[in-house]
Image (cartoon, rainbow, N blue to C red):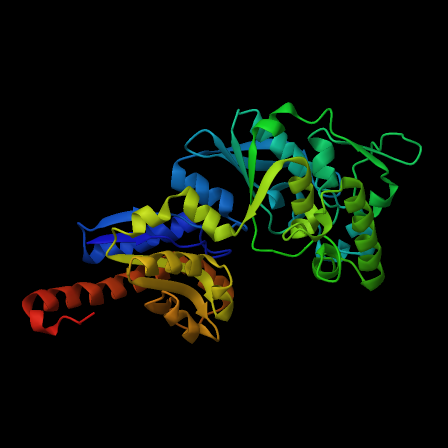
Length: 391
């Protein structure tokens, strides 16, 4: 029997690769000779870099960059197994994790910059890659990608036609009167940028970066209005009708900056990852697919990893078993969208810290029990052909 294992990470418990290993351990207890293909997955958010590196036998690199508030930190990027594709998570350099909860204030969100993400891009381009995948989730910024642009060589000028040399944040954008790209990193023009994001929000307006995502980063109503006006000004200087481009508001407008200054396109995260690891080719020959995530509920159908996996498997009529740390409301709708069965993995009531620690053994045990049922039904089907279900 052939199994494809394509789970997401279980946040704070297991990486996608570790989930795959636990699933494989469970299968091997029942079917030692089963053919198992592990494909660590992600939806484009946190964990995308590790998933793609693990799935393609790539390599991770460390580099010093500037975090959102200006302090040097060590961040990582990856080069996939083809040696021609880099993977970057913007949150590695510019994520909300760098800004403690008590510092998420109106003053802070005006300062946070994506400069470090631009530094990651420069580092990745030194490997002579032809493509760069960038995960846009988890940002702390609202600078329209201006900081990133500065790092890759774009110059911004004020009303006196003096170059703005401080690292730009969302509160500084109103100073810009002219943009010059003549000194942009020359490798940018030779490289395709694939942006992984399920966010379709435009850069500006009531559905834009400042009003929708600003509050979680520290903006109050007045600050969101100010930042939106700044982004509108910035968009006019850029041109290209960037303000209303779907997805330009992703990551505090980093989507807009990448669309404006690189050869970039935005893709739904899980579809992009699935394409990179050739998931459809692996699934179409499988007998069963196992997937999973930390929590499954009605939101899973809105671009989460198990949903993307199930949609591919459905095309080939391959059964999909999904495991979850917890199961919430609304999963009934998932059974019509490619899911065959959904199982919670907890063995008993326990506190969250212990549940996270027990994740691998819970996944292994649950997978083993599901496969025991699969193996039993297969034996019965062989012994009694008349009992086989009719399609």
